[in-house]
Image (cartoon, rainbow, N blue to C red):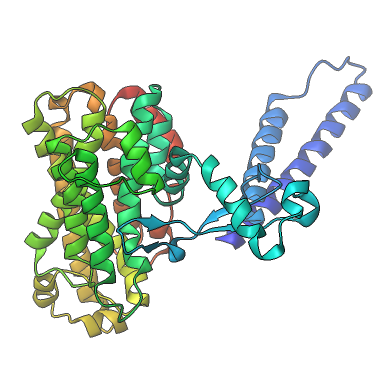
Length: 416
């Protein structure tokens, strides 16, 4: 792909040079015929603007990923996911790393012995950490489509509640990456920590609220009743089902898992967007979107999981197409694997179309809860079909290049 952008950059620069030459020739021609110059011909103007736009766009892609501008020159506070561990009391300890310069530290801090300087400065920074800012960074990094959707909502209270819920979903989803091989029940204990924390926030269990940014944000921005507690627990239960990278027994188990996880998240988001109305219709559409998202997520995750030697594709589909995890891992029967991907694609597409047919039954205020999920599904299906039903395409692992524009347009039209 970088070769294509380099070629476009060269062509656009050549085109700009041609525009400059054409403009000079036009001026020379006017002097020869003794006419006054008024403006350049329209074709030269259009060619100039198009060439300039292509050159800027190509240069931006050649330069690589943009870096965030650091807004704190004195200390860089970094949350490390690998260094979060559960304390015996059930609370989560945040380890902060501060990279500071001696010259930039205040005089009082420089007087502290070197052995205690890190902990003293760390405690001062911890007090100033904003839980909602932590949630915003986490969602932006790991759930970009939902982050874009939230930016379109004007009500700050609703924004805060949605960010808190999405941050919880990200925190739970990252537990798999934190678990080390042969770590025993470490992952189960971490999931239990989140379940217990939700019960404390709902008032069903007594105990101190853990000093964890996402939990603090939920406490401040969300009122957790019995219905929301069940949906929040569903997020944890769904992660427990796939904690050991166990493959799905059949398509039915994959669909049920997708409903438990994705549908619960959509219903949680919808509950913060307005009062309950026609909840049965909302749950029905959320289930269909959830199934479609679960299938496309599995398609997107297949390649990264194969690199770890893990195959989570439904076993009944593997048997139907004469495949085994070993055959999939070694790509021994690509045609059969392509047929399996077509079956997954068909299931996701049918569920998405069924949900969109029922979109009129969803209140307009609650439709933003579906937009990010629908955008993810559309992008994944488009990438798979464009790659001739192959999951080994780099495009499938990336965000849609026009995700922000598409979301803005759908938000304006109030459609998903």
